[in-house]
Length: 170
Image 1: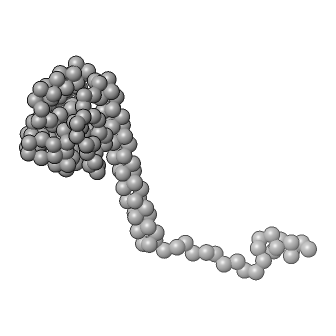
Image 2 (image 1 turned 120 degrees about the horizontal axis):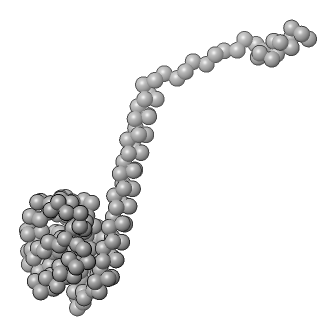
Image 3 (image 1 turned 90 degrees about the vertical axis):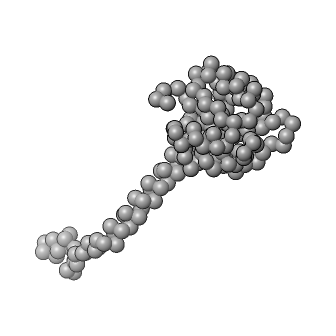
């Protein structure tokens, strides 16, 4: 895929809708691959693990958005998953999905929501990385402190420096 264009994987069993949406996203500057089944999506994810976003219908012929989400997380954890729900169905509640949009969606809204999902997902991913790095640093510091004996304190002999000087002159 070697292009710098935003890469979008669209998983939807409705060929006409997927074709129209791919065309709109392509005109918006995205490189779009369309999969009509979860196993097709898996092949795209395996071939190119650097997707900017995965758009999925709630249900396709061989699975659901949950299946798409699980495969995306395992192959491409940096890609947010956005579900495109049917207007006549219930809104799917899928833990881990970054956003849910109801079809038909205006192209400008779709592009804006994709960008928002990407920013939020990147923030959450970076936050997890920062927490992991800080935890590792804390563990290393604790291990170093446990391995290093505490510094020896000097004992004072009676009066402090100032007290001795006063005793001599006083």
